[in-house]
Image (cartoon, rainbow, N blue to C red; front, side, top):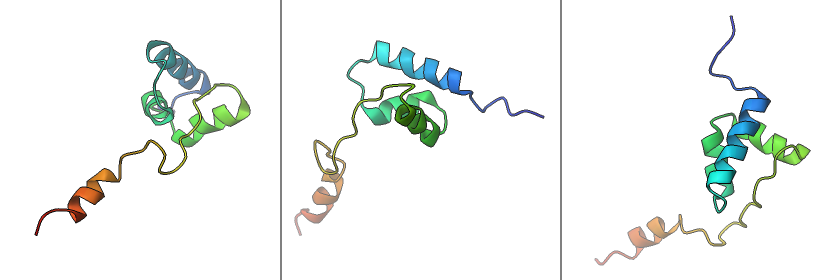
Length: 77
């Protein structure tokens, strides 16, 4: 019995390439999420050189996810 939800490498590669054509400025995470495959498999294909993902942003650089924590701390008392 095969699992139809599991994508082959070729399907992941095609999904990544299509998304990158439509969204040339997409972040690495957006591309991985769109591929809807296992994130480690997508990153593995990048490490093997089969696909080319954008470079990962350094921690804290151009990332504003922690702004939510700062807002919670700086709330007026």
